[in-house]
Image (tube, rainbow, N blue to C red):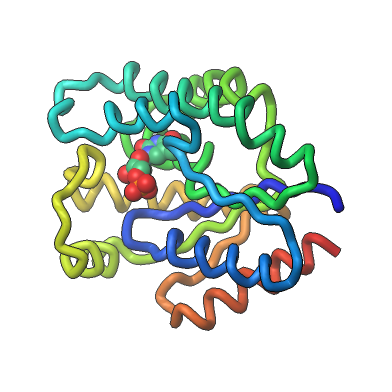
Length: 207
Ligand code: TMP
């Protein structure tokens, strides 16, 4: 069986992590060999970088540092984990990847996309996901869901509603410009409906 690299994206509270866990379970039940991972993170070094990126103590971090750290974590993750696992025939499900950089640092922070694409391609060595899901949710619903979770906000989550609106618009643009790879999912549906849509799209892709 040929390995696959599938990524899950969306603004905070969109339900992507729940869907990733469900997808992993359903694929494993169908006999697929599945690996679950996340960004920033997924390896020892990348998880250490994650702590720096998300700590609210690092509020003075400049955009240039932020971009390079996300991409540094990705460079390690791609080479140490994603490429070897896909090469050995696994289905790698990753919670966030390059579209998060284009969304958060590009559309959100306003860093030019051509700069981000250059740095990102250097980090990934040109690896692209086979399939990407963007779980689309209004910023209002996202805020309500995040308030219900009631956990302390990390450095990124402390941004304004306008920041998240720009990211959502960015994600919608990305889905429109790469419809073959990037699938837009309405994240306001029930967990079961979303899960069915995701698994059907993966099965269609694998065939
Ligand atoms: P999460 O694990 O809760 O999704 O947290 C990761 C945070 O990092 C989230 O706020 C999105 C942000 N992020 C970026 O800003 N750029 C990136 O490239 C990635 C992977 C995540």
